[in-house]
Amino acid sequence: MFAGRTKAAIAIALLTAPLFVQIAHAERLVTSLSTHRVLISSNFTGTSLVLFASIEESDAPRDKPKKYDIAVTVRGPAATFVARKKDRILGLWVNYESRSYPNVPSYLAVLTNRPAAEFGPLELQTKYKLGLSFAAFTPSIVADEEFRNALVRVKKAEGLFYDEANAVTFLTPTLFRATLPIPATAPIGPYEVDVQVFFNGVLTAQQTTAIEVVKTGFEAFVAHSARENRLDYGLGVAFLAIVVGTLAGLVFRRN
Amino acid sequence: MSIYLPIAELPVNIFLIFGLGIAVGFISGMFGVGGGFLMTPMLILIGIPPAVAVASVPSHMAASSLTGTLSYWRKKLVDSGLGLVLLSGGMLGTAAGVWIFSLLRRLGQLDLIINLSYIVLLSIIGTLMIVESIRALWRSMHGQAPVLRRPGTHSWFHGLPLKFRFRQSRIYVSAIPVTAIGFGVGLLGALMGIGGGFLLVPALIYLMRVPTAVSVGTSLFLTLFTMLAATVLHAVENRSVDVVLSLSLMIGGVIGAQSGARAGQAIKAEQLRFLLGILVIAVAARVGIDLLTKPLELFSVISSEAG
Image (cartoon, rainbow over all chains, first blue to last red; front, side, top):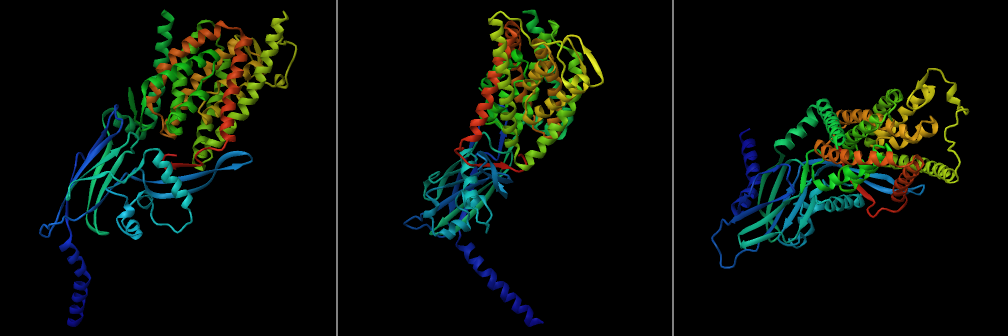
């Protein structure tokens, strides 16, 4: 029994050892975002957040600075998306085939300092979800390349998927800046900003920060009413139509 | 100047929305149509999600048809009795339409049904109206009396029970076909995000033999009530009525509707029917071309919660 416990302890030590090693050599990442709350009011036309981050190297400074690679991924609230393909049926172009994708970020931006393909092998891109199509979907065995590509293409055209291969700028070899665009059509909800630092094709530091896109004031009130007090809201809009129509009738009658 | 729409969740140019409201309101007042069949596709074109466009346009139509109704009412061109009988069918039709709308949206074939209904209905009605009005214009050019109202001729539905006399319209018919017309118009209206006036006006003119001006006035009267009902039902059922969009459209709409109602009362009935026919055919052609030509992007992506 005693021997068993020792074995278990050794096993745990062996399992955790590589982790300790990695942490010991890992760089620490300090990030700062210009804001954590994007407020949507009636004059909202989109905004951008500025991210500053510094890589703190644990080992002593060396003569030749390390050349890091950075990937900043912004994910909006996840939703299920359906991609539909139009086909010609009896001469008419109608929706025919479709694929449903659960858990796709409704907003997605992947910003890097250079094309992610140059960070390292392809496995690195799939493992750390570098790039829109890797970050958007959970791995699937279904042959649906066409639909996935279409989803990314359509969302990109809508401005809700965004990638930029030189959006991360180094101010010093260890200090960098990235501008995260939040478009006017940005979905409401919690967002996640994931900063990954690579060196020689290996992840050396990572940090995730949360931001939130919320409606404020009148917009928040309207959205809340439309969702929670449906009947009152509907009657309210109908009443508004009557008031506007009657007022216009009276005004024009006098003219 | 742009303004953020809280339900559509995107900003729009406020002047563009006002402008659309005025233009469509003018057509609405002139022809006694709600104008939704023009407004809904235009809003979708500028990027408003279809669900929000379809649900928000009815309140705009309610406001413009109310001002139009007031204008026709003063000239005694609204048959409120006929309107109320139509309305009883219209309310049922609207409820059925909103329900089918949600169902089709889940099945993903909403666009197809809407487009096919547009093309079939609009081309038939448009063609009939143009042919008829050209004949009428031809006759009046040659000095013959218009023969649209033929007191001696009776259709099969004149034999039905529950007969009513509708004074302003100068007709004496059963309430059954009138209710059926109301139901059909309400159903298609809610389903297609349109007031259905462009169906109702020809139905009253050609099936019920109601004078053109009274058809327009009564259609506006009916549109007012069906669209108020559609607004409330869409708010409850689909939660996609955007009050900011609605109000912006309404304000433009009532201004346009007043001038439109004056213009409509100023021109001859045959000319009005001819112009409405052209308008109806033009919309059908546009939708038809869209369905028949290969789209640039074959794929569309929607969130399954919202769409």
